[in-house]
Length: 231
Image 1 (cartoon, helix red, strand yellow):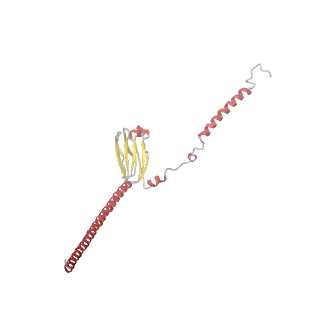
Image 2 (spheres, rainbow, N blue to C red; image 1 turned 90 degrees about the vertical axis):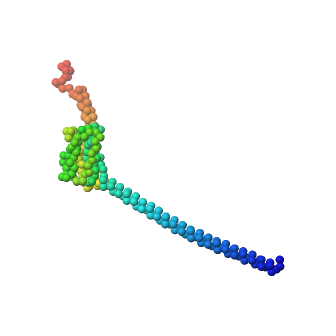
Image 3 (tube, one colour; image 1 turned 120 degrees about the vertical axis):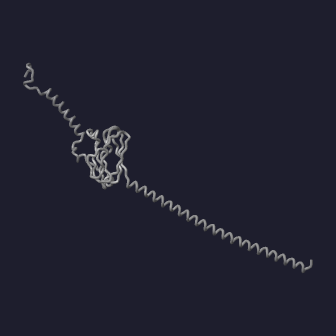
């Protein structure tokens, strides 16, 4: 091969290598651009999906909050109390004195036989009682809306003292929060304690024995002395 042919061949090979390199570089650049474009689209899709999921979660939390709030409000507005009618076979109501707020539902549960709820007195337009006589296992409820004092009895056992009262007032919550009032025993007419009474009784018995012994031993008089006693 002469010098001219060698240079021609070398130049052609270099040109071919340069062309191949340029094509590869272009293809790589195109592939990188394509990959970048695909990645961008995927990220946008992920962000949109994430926002939708977050929106659904937030909506779900809001719905749950609304449901919980509704349930809580229902519990507050619809308080329930229970009165046992004839517990353990006794002719009583338990409790026999109940104070509630308007809108409270009272459940009456029979735990013994032959009882009713006969209203003795109450505000106009309020509860009218439950007159039919029922037996163990019967349940009855009423929602008290009208404020006032409701006094009721069990007709078959009124002579045994089976009576009770329900007071409906807006101040029921305040009274419950304050709790029971402490009472000083001395303020209700109990000035003398039991141990004082016991001590006084034993003292009186002791004095009685001492007095009797003294009289029998040293208390003879002219009327009680025997005839042969020397003076």
